[in-house]
Image (cartoon, rainbow, N blue to C red; front, side, top):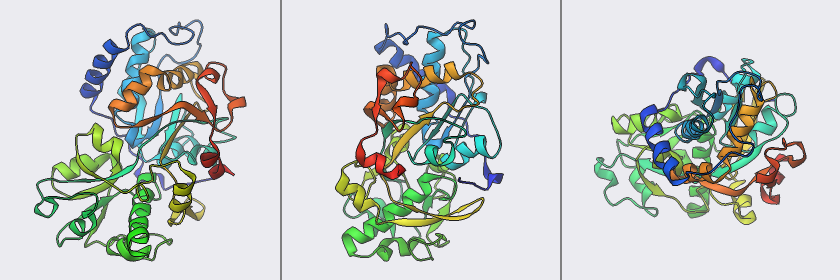
Length: 362
């Protein structure tokens, strides 16, 4: 089981006004859609009427919008920002396992994490609902980035005085995915995992990554947009969904590098990258894998029915519309690691994990 340093676990709330505006716009486009089973009357769904969520930072715009739609369809349901926290996926899940928090919904930016950390004690299944390739988000006011594209981004990023932001790999998949991108870029185009990675980290590929302070700053994923807009870093390796939802300038990366493909050949290529993570019980080696988001309803959910309805809405047409509007690529249909364990409400929406994804779970 994973463990993390919980001292940096801070709840980061989204820009709520923007969330409501987006949800309201899309609500008009999906008017008439009804949740399977209808709204949630309090008598039929005992437990707290407040939807509680712990999830990956990248989901901090789209999940509140889905929650808003759920509350809009079910007037007895409350969806306050104060009951939702968005941070690094490992920290988000540790809020359940290490801090024993109770949430109706838990989600991560790596489909491997819920089975590894929550199943079988804290959860019985996972639904994989979306993906998002990695991109290089950047500050367009930086002179070195004039004319930057998917071919020349490395040389522009390595210009003197340019600072790359990355998340903490031991807390956030965004951090280790950034490392994998740098390793794969060097391997694919220069024949060496260290060719690009070595400019930004002082330790060898595959080991515990130590940032080079002259070129790299380790900061929370949820602060990337603010740091770019205030010129504290000049670039940030993050998900296309994050860059899109925050209106950031970004460069798309080669599919052999961006962790965005589920093709078996690409998956094998991604696995050549690796890094070492710190956990509460020591270290563990993590390997490159496609970015795929997973969600579950924890076993100790205050209101499991409410959590299930949220997941149902997430993987239904209204949820998929919100995911696409925020730059995610929805999986249609959604996929589950244990279809037989799904609640009846979700089974019509979900199929078994495709082999290329399932192999990562053993």
